[in-house]
Image (cartoon, rainbow over all chains, first blue to last red; front, side, top):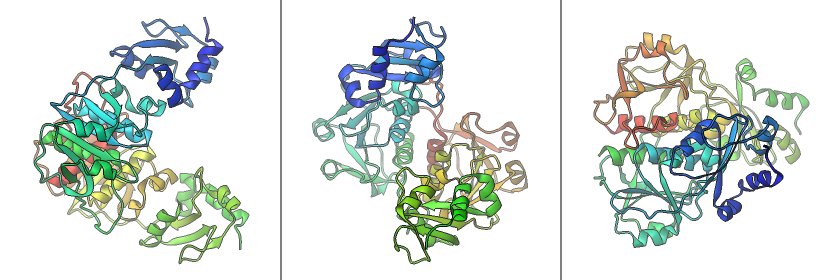
Amino acid sequence: MSITKNEIKLIKSLGQKKFRQQEQLFIVEGVKGIREFLDSEFELYQLFATDEIFAAETTLISPKDLQRISVLKTPNTAVAIFRMPKPKSVIESSLVLALDDIRDPGNLGTIIRLCDWFGIEHLVCSSETVDCYNPKVVQATMGSLTRVQIEYTDLENYIQNSKLETFGTFMNGSSIYSEALPKKGIIIMGNEANGISSAIESLVNKKIGIPRFGNIKATESLNVASAAAIILSAFKSH
Amino acid sequence: MSITKNEIKLIKSLGQKKFRQQEQLFIVEGVKGIREFLDSEFELYQLFATDEIFAAETTLISPKDLQRISVLKTPNTAVAIFRMPKPKSVIESSLVLALDDIRDPGNLGTIIRLCDWFGIEHLVCSSETVDCYNPKVVQATMGSLTRVQIEYTDLENYIQNSKLETFGTFMNGSSIYSEALPKKGIIIMGNEANGISSAIESLVNKKIGIPRFGNIKATESLNVASAAAIILSAFKSH
C-alpha cells in the first residue's frame, strides 16, 4: 500500500478553508493528537502513517511521502483526515463564549484549550473568525478540539435570538473583580486589533473589563487569549 | 548616508544570543516598538530607517537594505539597535514573577506583557529561560519590555537568598480560588514540558494550582502563558 496522487492532492487542498468546507474534512498531524481524535466522537476518514501504531485502519507510507503531505517542518509519524462533526445547537443553560472576528490561529487554539479547561462546552464564532479546522489551530488545541463544541454563525443574529445575558469585554468595562458574574450568559471577546464591532456592542447587556495595575499611561492592551484566560477564570471562580 | 557592510554584519549577528551578550546590544523592529524604546530609559545605539520619521539621529537606508537587515517577512520602515540596560537588583517588597526555564519566545513575550499589565515590576528568569532580547520576544512584547525589569540569574540561588515567601504553580497545587494570596512573594512558573524542576520545587513554600472545571480525565495542561494570566489576575484581585 502507498499513498496515491489523488490522496496527496486531497490532503494538500485541505490546507485551504474553501476545500475543507467543500469536503467537510480536516487534517490532524502527530500521534498524540490523532489518538485524541480517534478516542473522540470524531469520525476518521483516512489515516496515513509510517508505522502500524494505531488500532485504526492505516495506509502505510514512506517517511518521504509523509514529508510530502505534512505541513510540519519535522513530521511526526502520521497524518490523519477526519470528518467535520455536524453542528449541534447551543445549550442556553450555561456559559457560552462568543468570538467576534478572532483572526489569529494561535489565539483561537489557546482559547479552545481554555474553554476545555474551564468546562465551557460551547464556543460560538462569528463567520469571519479564523476556521477552527485550520491546521495551525488544530495543532495549537492539542486535542481540546474534541471536547469543545464550536459553531460558526452570524453572531449578531445568534445573540439577538438568545435569551442569555450578554457580557462584552472592553478596555473601559467595569472591573471583573467587583462585578457579580453569573453562572450563565454569553461572554463576548472581540477582534485582536479592533475589539468588539459596533453592531455587536449594541447588543451587549454589560460591559466588563480587566483593570490595569501597571503603568496607566501605557496604551497596550492584553493579548485576547490572555484576556480570555483571565475572564473565564473570573466567571468560574465566582 | 547608507548602511555599511559591518553594520549589516553586526545586525545579523544580533539574531544570536552569543553576540547579543558579547555586544550588549539588541534589535527592535517597527515604528511603534522603536518609539516606545526611544521614549523609555533604554539607550539608542543606532537607528536605520527608510524615512526621517524619528526625532533621533537616523541612518537613512533604501527599502532594499531594510529588507536585508530585517527578520520580518514584511519589514516595517525601520530597524533600531538599542543597548541592554544594566541589571538592577530586585526589590523584596513586592510580587516577583520567577520563570524556571521557559523556552518559547511567544510565551515569554506574553508573560512580559502580563507583568506590565498587572504591575509586576520584576521578572526573574533562570539562566536557561529564553533570552528576552531574542527578536521574537522583543516583537511579541510590544513595548512592555521597556516597563518590566528582567533579570537572568541562577534561580535556585536567587530563591535561597530571598526572604520572600515562594508560590510554585503545580497541576495538583491547592486552588488559587480558595488560597489566601499575599501582596508580596515570589510566584514561580515552570518549563512548558516539565513544569518546575525538582531543585526549585524543594524551595517552594506553597504549591498552588488552577482548578480544572472541564473533563477531568483529559490530560492536557494549560499553556504556561494562559496559566500566568490566571495566576497573576488571582494574586492582584485579592
